[in-house]
Image (cartoon, rainbow, N blue to C red):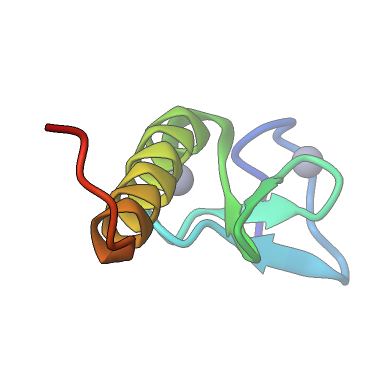
Length: 69
Ligand SMILES: [Zn+2]
Ligand SMILES: [Zn+2]
């Protein structure tokens, strides 16, 4: 199996991209919220992670009893 980032063979300790299932070295992969991603999917993952955090923050703010207006 070849790493999609550096093109070298993965002998052991390889990970898989959570989005496209591409094989990667652990040191070539990026980690977002406990999941591994290739460089291509990393950008997308970072975006959705941000959305997820924003949604969570939204949810928390809505739970607060105070009103702005
Ligand atoms: Zn690699
Ligand atoms: Zn990927």
